[in-house]
Amino acid sequence: MLVKERTSVYDFSFHLVFVTKYRKEIFTTDEMRTDMKNILLDIAKNNDVEVNSLEVTPDHVHMLISFKPKYAASSIVKALKGASARAWFKQYPATKKLLWKGHLWSPSFFMSTVGNVSEKIVKKYIEDQMKKSTQKSH
Image (cartoon, rainbow, N blue to C red; front, top):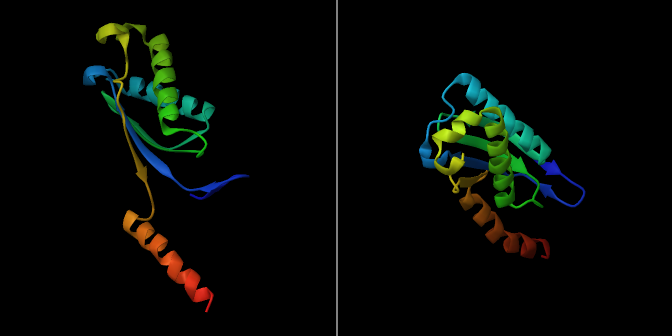
């Protein structure tokens, strides 16, 4: 979806995946998965992140998100993971004992851009710009 801001126009989405420490199954009930979804949705809202899709499995999270270009992807991930871990342990303190040193999330994550046009199409579009420019001048 095209978003128009005062100083920018953008259209990008990211597929974000992060896992629990040691892939430990923490979100083992529907209630726990729903609670983590709600935690993540609240954090996203507070950090100007649009969540287009979200799924919590017993040991990892998948999100389809979009955010303003002024934000660094790593900062968004840090906000989501850090705040969600604090909120989770406040709500479910007993789960901290299931994790060595009490870290909910693995330090790594996977993030990929999701586009509605392929890299090949964008490359061709860029390469064709000079052709279009020279055609206009004739």
